[in-house]
Length: 412
Image (tube, rainbow, N blue to C red; front, side):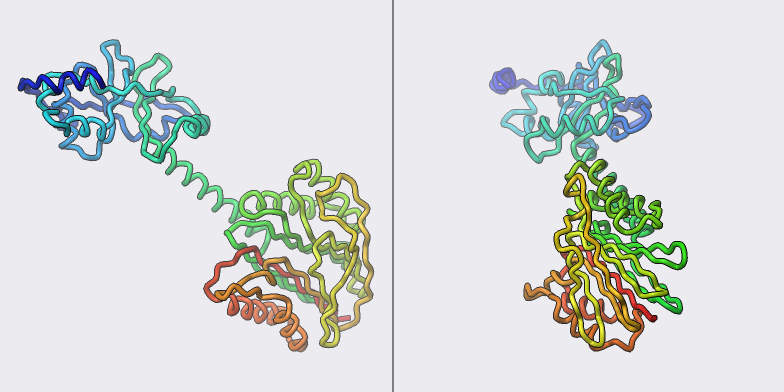
C-alpha cells in the first residue's frame, strides 16, 4: 500500500468517459462463460463470472460496482488473457473512502488495488479445495478465490460462503438419506402376534439418525431370534454402524444358534471398525412352542422379566463384553423357562437416563410402576402408554439420546 499512500498526497482531478456494455448495462465489468467441469469440481460453485481487464480505470469500476451492489468481487484479466488476481468490493470502497481517495485514484488502473490471491484450477475436486481452505483461512470473513483453466485463463470466482453453503447442503442431504435408510432398517414401531407369541418394538432417534437398533427374525419350526442394540456414539457415524449390524443380522443362518450369531457379529465389527466402534446389546433366541429362552446380554444390562406383577432383572452373562471390544470372545448364554403370561422388556439407555425441565432423570421406577400395573393390556397398548408417560415427563426437554425398546410376551 506504500504507492497508494504516496498517491494520496498528490491529488489531481482527471475525468474519463466510458460506454455501457449492452449485455450487462455496465461500463467496464463483463461476464465470462465458465468452462464446464464434470463431477464434484469446484467450478460447480461458481456464481460469480464477472471480470475486468487490467487496464480498467478504478473509478469506472467503482461506478459499475455502485450500480450493482450484488457484485462482491471481480476477476482481473491481463493482456495475455491470463488471470491476474481479483478485486474485492469492500477493499476498493475502503480505499476510495479515505481522504481524497477518489481524486487520487481517478487516473489509476485497477492494477493498483488488485489482490494477488491463490487461484484454483476449475476442475479441482470441491472437497480437495475445502481441505486447503481449512488450512489457509484464518478468520470468519468471506473470502473470494479465482478459478483458472488448465491454460491459466480466468474461469470465475467462488467464495468461502459458497463453499460453506454447499457443504452444509451435502451434509443435510446425507443426513436425510441416512435417516431414510435407517427408518427402513429400524422401524419406529413394529408389532406382531400369533397364538404363542406377541411382541412390540419401538425406536425414536434423538437426532434423526442414531445408533439404536432392534430386529426380529423367524426361522425353522417357528423359532424366533431377537436383538436390541445400542451402538457407541451418536449421529451419522452410529447410523452407519447400525447398517452394518442390520446387514450381518439379516443374512445370518439362525440355525447356527445365538452363540454363533454373537461371535459372528463380533468378528464383523472387529474386522470392519478395528476396535473403534462397539455395540452393547441383548440377543434372544425363543422357542414359542416350549417357552425356552436363550439370552446373551453383551454389556447391555437393561433386560427384565415381568411375571405376576413383579419386575425381575435378568443377569445373563455378566462377564460378557460388548460386541467389537475384543478380537475373540466366547459369550455366556443364559437360559430361562418362560411361563404363560410372562412379559420381557429390553430397552436402551435413552429411556431411563432422559432428563426433564428440572434436570431430573426419568429412571426405572416409573417404568416398573406402569408395567407391573398393566398386565391385562396387550403390548401395543403398553408400548404406547409407557412412552406417553415418558414424553409427559420430559415435557419440552429434547431427547438427549436415542430411545428404543423391545417387549415380548409368551402366551404359552
